[in-house]
Amino acid sequence: MQYCRFSHQGDVRYGLIEGPIVTRTLTQAPHAFADFDRGEATDLPLRAVRLLAPVEPSKIVCIGRNYREHARELNNAVPTEPLVFLKPASSLIGPEDTIERPADLSERVDYEGELGVVIGKRCFRLREGEDVRSYILGYTCVNDVTARDLQNKDGQWSRAKGFDTFCPVGPVVADGLDPWKGVRVQTRVNGELRQDGVTTDFLFALDVLLRHITSVMTLEPGDLIATGTPQGVGPLKAGDVVEVTVEGVGTLRNPLVDRK
Image: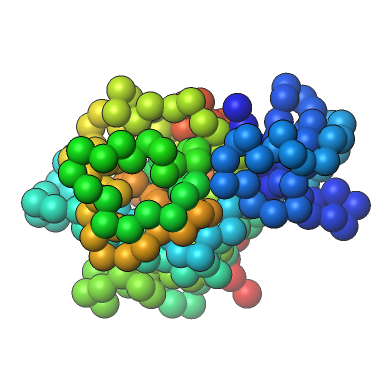
């Protein structure tokens, strides 16, 4: 199943997707797909609505260098435990929204296509062996846009990862994926394949990530986890179009312009 967050005639809602139709809607974010059973019945053509970022997280928690070859391509050490950082909620944009490159501050802005995990139930200090699937609402596409030169310069990542528009997410949230068995993550720039990874290549599996994150902070429903990017990252220029495709979710497409 899949759901979206959309705007239609000035009204913003969450909607369950069945084929080309949005069939049930909610005014608040779902905590489970079953929430749509109690939603408002509707039949809107999907093509008639404007898709928005499908999540409204209290926080965006990201994992750095979770693919061995990505760490190596940037001449970084392979981490021995999950490397956690945060992106601000103000960096969030949706499908077809424009990424704004801060050319006055950064000379290199990179794409990073990733599998996104949407939390459905509050969790804290998850125990070893506890089934983390019950805390996951679904999965989506994330582009962890990064000012690479500022990341290298600052020694920490808040500025490089935190510009407005630096976290495209969407187009939908889907259940039924199994990252432990393998989900393909691809990124294309202007139609050219640049990244092609599978989640079975994670250094740290999703259950390890969630236990590690929740040993530090409480994850709330709607929070977004970006699980790391495969090798093949690279710079973008004004006029480029970036597409992140997650198997079982769809394709997140965003153009890039220089910030005015």
